[in-house]
Image (tube, rainbow, N blue to C red; front, side):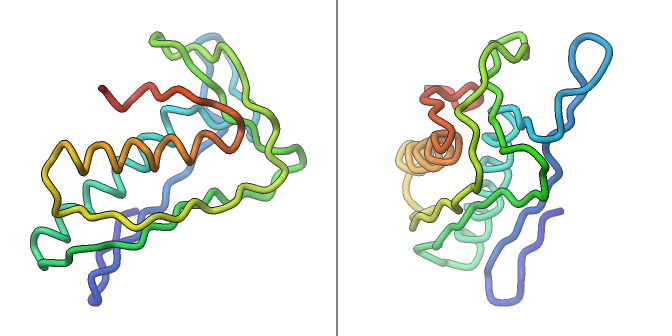
Length: 136
């Protein structure tokens, strides 16, 4: 769900976790694949950029969190380019929301760099240091 509010704020809510595996079955509910986190960040920031350009807003304060009621700690699955989970992050007992101030009206390269840094901060809570969706 994507919403642009009357005051120019933007929210994105999406379900992650419990995704089907390549073989029969599903990943555990507490496993979120890193590209899904990156895609949620990209979705949010694309709407933020469009809103910024349309409404002339120079800066956005961004806050990204993952909320879940899980029996086991959250893990972020690191996937290869074929979407196979090849490693799991360190278990995260409580995901701390990531906050940043972005300038979405900056030139594309600058905004892309800001977006990439934010996505990396989001997956890094579990110790992952590589992104799959954000191209160099």
